[in-house]
Image 1 (cartoon, rainbow, N blue to C red):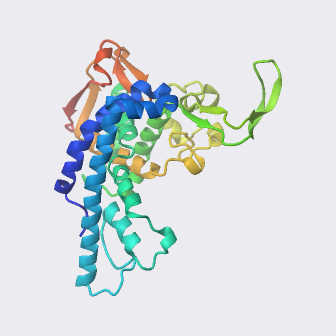
Image 2: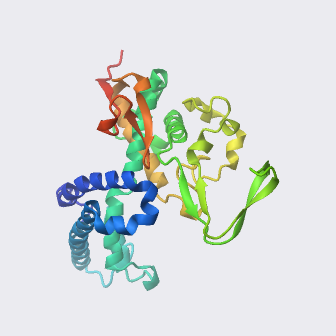
Image 3: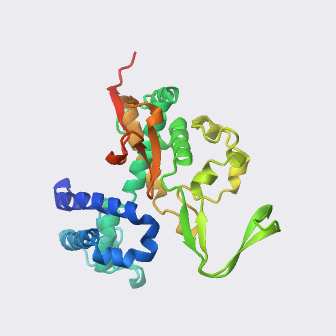
Length: 347
């Protein structure tokens, strides 16, 4: 019992990814209105029906996966002649087995266990959570490396200093320029450019220094009423010259060797950025996302050289709701980033 085989997940992947593509397209086209018409959109449209179908597929296959894992855990416990299952008694590297094992452990309080229904509901998260934002970040990283060949070469030299094609997480985390390239990518090309929040109660937001409002009155705080909509301008903060300096719009990984002091005021959960937000609702998977990005770039940049297949001025960012590259000359083809890949050969 361990990591599930790829073949056991193929039914889920074959059914889900075509559906996911349609869902993302649907979400993009109605994002601005989804808060008000989400229910009708979900219930009355063809894409809403697609989401219902996808949920049913996940429920059916997820139920089978949970039952299979439970049976495997009980079988192993029986073979080991265990009288009751403890958290340390059974091994299994995949997330689903870990979760089910914890639920079945007798030394885990009932209040800390999940129902089978809750476990099944987590399976889409295990498979798909963060795939869109991570893939978008990878795309913008390749865009930046293609636009700045010297940065690409410097990064490649650092990556090639690792003798293994399969580095450990610790080895990836010990590469400073790789970390700087990813941090700068997430600053300049944050996948989610802005967020909205609704105030659950009346509150007061402190400000670092007084400001003059649109009525000409000096304010030293911002009063928020319950129900007010609040916009968190992630991209604007990440590109602010007041915070990052006059070169805020430039891709410069070297800035992270001595980052400006002003960024200490940004309350992000990672890297003094709001890419993963902050506070109790910050992205819980940001560490996984960062190491995933590092692994992707490690593999690609060591193996290939990248350059644009179209003029750089033809590439723009379109946001709906994620900021992704598109071509001015081919708007009808949707999101794309045409690149030329050449196998890297050391000289």
